[in-house]
Image 1 (cartoon, rainbow, N blue to C red):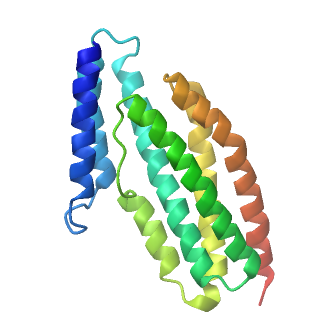
Image 2 (cartoon, rainbow, N blue to C red):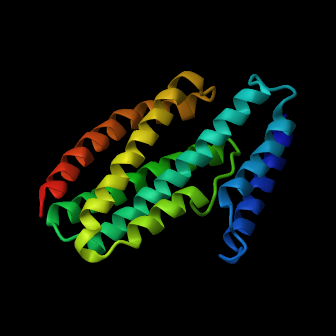
Length: 201
């Protein structure tokens, strides 16, 4: 079993390197590539594992989605620092960049240890959210950024809350348990900032 895990860790690492070297035009669905690697891992680990195939699948799919969201939050935070008009929105973007960079580092440490492949780029759906915010002209950026960020946090909080009842891996569960109150606080503060931006003429 240990040899199998080592072989699979090597395969996942090689695949991650290969994913990182793919040209942007070819990497249309980076999360799908990671999910494909994890599907093979689940099959390999199914026998002799304390987890079922369904549990392995859910854990890896959650990790992939969480990684994509972290990348989106970091990218949007950087964008806010560049394009926001109001200083508190710039500051919020900086905080989002810092906290989700830290969150992604913690997630990566867990997934490396458990041989779960993560995407090197955000999903096409998350990329579409980024492009939508980036497309906004400067005068409307703050409102658009905060509106999309509010909706993103609503989606993320819902996903993490569900994960507290479905995750099998104890390290992933501990990660989610730690992150959920922070995400709820982000959701609340983003809603406050959006109301302020929305009130401005």
